[in-house]
Image (cartoon, rainbow, N blue to C red; front, side, top):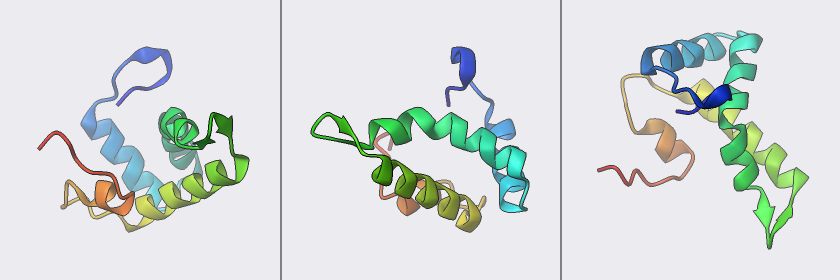
Length: 88
């Protein structure tokens, strides 16, 4: 997972951010949104044009996935986002 400056976030830190976000920590949630911002932005393009409504919907979907995420199931967030895990 890439974060600001191009460094890689350790899985433990990422999971901790997810758990804090799920518990209602707004700072942790904002950090996660920043981590996923490039992916959300990229997927908010329709015919090469940025769609603000789609971007907001993807942010809402991300927040819902974080709230529902079961940390005992590795692929659950991918399923929630309807993304196929191509690393399998």
